[in-house]
Length: 110
Length: 115
Picture (spheres, each protein chain N blue to C red):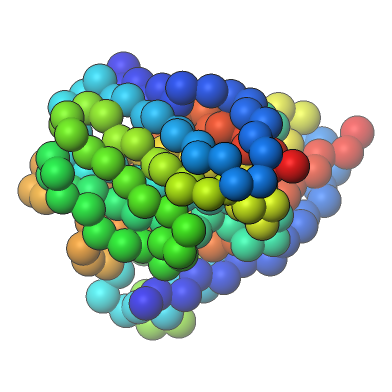
């Protein structure tokens, strides 16, 4: 099955940019996603990118996809305290299923 | 607005008890999923279903079973709960093939503690 890997922790100062990185193994993955989980809550889709795109921007969020290296990143501009959460990278390749990374806990410090 | 609801937010059970976790979605989605979430391990798929009465094993099905008698409802059953099943359980649903980007919509989770 597909392996999705991401670093576990990121600490960032309020107002700076955050960059969360993710790698995946299945080159046939068609959709790649970023989900956000706030404390005590389920996962909420932040954004996704289709495999024929290199970049997608949505307000403060920028997703970059390097298909050759199977590398996905999420950049959050002007990080706020409300951005403190766990961020999951996920990949869809076949059989209805998503493969999730372990999640990156982002802590925003004043 | 897609809504996925789970029957309990918190549950405490004793070792050996039979435990039912219920999940309901209101968007007529064909696909439903059960995951468990543990720190440092992310989400691991237990079972999923792509149609009524259909079920498929995920990555960690041992100790669990599921039931899907109606399209909107997907139940996770722990036949005999054990302490290593203490975890956060997340239910999700998605639309079927050809209907979009395969996004999964999640419920709020059930934190299960087995004593």
